[in-house]
Image 1: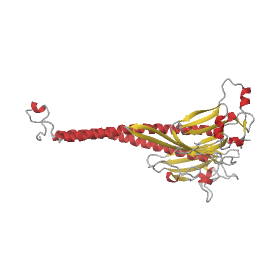
Image 2: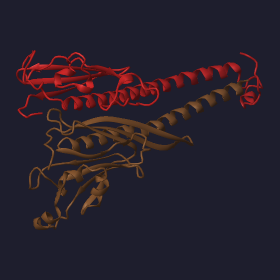
Image 3: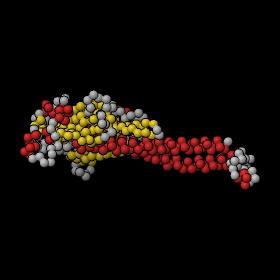
Image 4: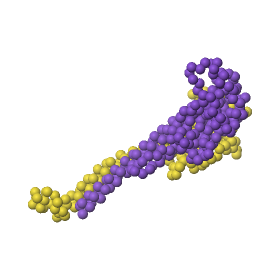
Length: 211
Length: 179
């Protein structure tokens, strides 16, 4: 009888320890996902707030099942002459890569040794129709010196939606839904932590539609 | 003392076979173990509660930021320059026309949508969060609250199901730009 009671108590303590360790293990990816989600949202905000105008937008899907992943092409600044027109180096794009579960930021980055004359030859005007066309996200990546860098990882789905583009009263906004996922083994079983980050990024000083 | 159940302890030899682990001793040991386990469980439980509260505060902050950004997309005043203290009759969030329309706006997670009207899916078992907006106009940055002014404090308060509310505020000013 005594041994049975001791065994039961021992078993209960072991089960408690296992549950506690499982909870700790499960809590780790959740916490890191939260940090990633906040960081990802702040990076999108930092890209969009100073931008001037939205171009082509692909909505994507929050669960990553869309055939065309989420992408938003935007006129990030008007730093190069001629003003009011889009040049290659003034464009940027945020695109979800469902294969690598990454949010990528694309822009034209000219080599450091390139002269201003060489840059002006490459940094040609981009027409608004090209900027706004359905195939623009794919076409943009093919342009010279356009490279991508990851700005956020562990994103299994992304959905973008733009509103008030071209409005002369409201500022244009990007609504985004990012689904962060991370898998790991907890006590020998697969555990998948998911965090949905919902946000809006509003341009602070949008410009008129570029020519 | 109760009679021994098992004569497996060396004490039995020392005591002439009088005792091993008795049921009473086992119960006492179990009680001690339960007290010790309770001492461990209490901080663990507090840690779990703390994590839940932190998670909820994070979600509340996210919801507050979202609404603040959405409000930032609105012009400071109506096209005729007037300031609103509430929306026009029949106006909804989808067609608000200026900052002041958001004054008194309220929603909850079970009715929250993106700007395009898609319901937000927070996942299964999501507790209810409520959001409330207040717009306070001032005639100067630190002036008293008035009915109208060129400065406005936009405050979004999100109440999670448990724990303290999260309030984010933003100072907005009337600008000369067309938007």
